[in-house]
Amino acid sequence: MTHDQNFKNLILDYPREAIALFAAVEAQAIDAEARVTPVRQEQLQERLGERFRELDVPLLVEWPDGRREVILFVIEEETEPARFSIHRLAHYCLDLSELLDTQRVVPVVVFLHAGEFPQELSLGGDAGAYLDFRFLAYSLSRIPAREHFRSSNLVARLHLPNMAYRPEEKLEVYARAVRGLAALETDPERQVKYLDFIDIYAALDENERIVYRRRYPEEVAEMTRFAERFMEKGREEGVKKGIRQGEAQMLLRQLSLRFGDLPQGACEQVESADADTLLRWSERILTATTLDEVFR
Image (cartoon, rainbow, N blue to C red; front, side):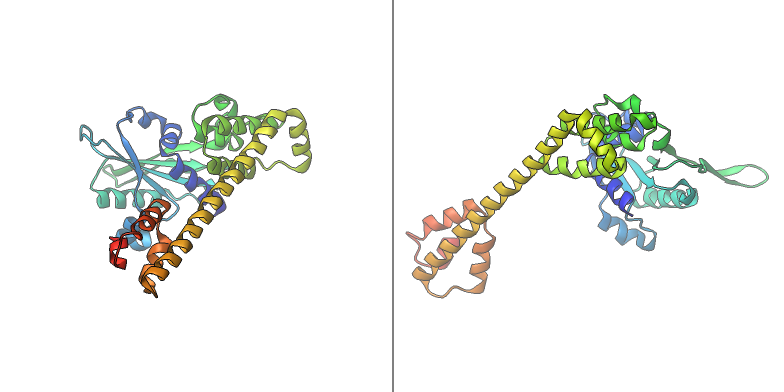
């Protein structure tokens, strides 16, 4: 389940990069004007009921000017190939095709571990086949990690530890993944989030970490900066929140002095307001004759 959720988060955070890596043959037609959005889970759950698979990631690609038809990418992660059901995938794709009223559906399955899996489904009788179903398979364990060492695709760089490499390359693979994260993602929260992602899949033991720290000091320093930026962002947000809460309490005291006991709704309104709104209300106290005039 952890693998499934990690994978899902990655696709939701970087949908274009995911399509470019896992469905490269189809991604070539998706230009900068296209809008890529996840299909809302609430919509799927409501319409599909028990058939809904929460850990699948359907991505809808739309062209706002309508010059091309919508296309749906159904990206599924399967940790163990032996658990994969092509019948289930076919059923799910047909459901989504009907639900979203499109025949432009691209099924994609990303296999985390090595193993055999069926690659097509054909239903028919003696006279011929009447339903043929295939999908794009991306087996991470068969992809040479070295091919993506310098990739500008962040999803590829983060998945380096899941790709194929020689045992002696493990630390370099880890370092290349960290370098990719540092170069391609600037948000401190996501940096820390996906450093954890790399750690989970690289699974360095303590001896490997000791060697890594000695061999890759720049990457270790970068990891430290990730944590520092994240903590600084948290401190800044905490300070801002504290200031806003203080301003809210000050405004409540001013309102009470001017208008007497405040209704519960007014208190809740003040406590949930942003800093700009609190400032505006504070200025209105000077001229307002009623509470409604302050909040108008």
